[in-house]
Image (cartoon, rainbow, N blue to C red; front, top):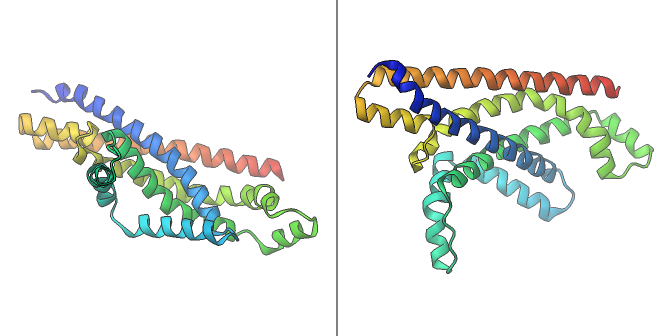
Length: 223
């Protein structure tokens, strides 16, 4: 086979990788904000749940998390009489989202805590509630500070999607391995896969830079 004939199946896999990256990054960002803000909550239950989630998913391997959701969770469900089998794409998105969300939560927490104490004191002097202080004072200043770190996490998430090939999800890595097994042309196939991942990373980096610039303009306009 000529190398051009590899492109069609690899592109199909790349599309699955793109979908996984988009879904897991969006859901991961939601989890990051929920857990990051929850870790700063005064409610001890919310704080404990947030800390537990962050520590568990930052302290364990993404591969083990993926395998647990796909292989172990259905077995646990059978033990209690509930069908907890997940389609590969759902298990993949869940594992990636939960993992990136835990790392992103620390970014959110750190950015919120980096807001000057004077800002909080001013909000208190204006009789702002804690919720209003968070939404009107802390987050508008913290979000631009989070963007570079979120960009790095998004790139890492893109690369981590390759792990879903281990649960037979036909992403770029899975398609590349299928082609290699069929043709034994390892050098060409993996070089193409490498270039595709690199291209996707460049596009994602550019998109995150644009988002970072937009958020920076929004903050400037708010001033």
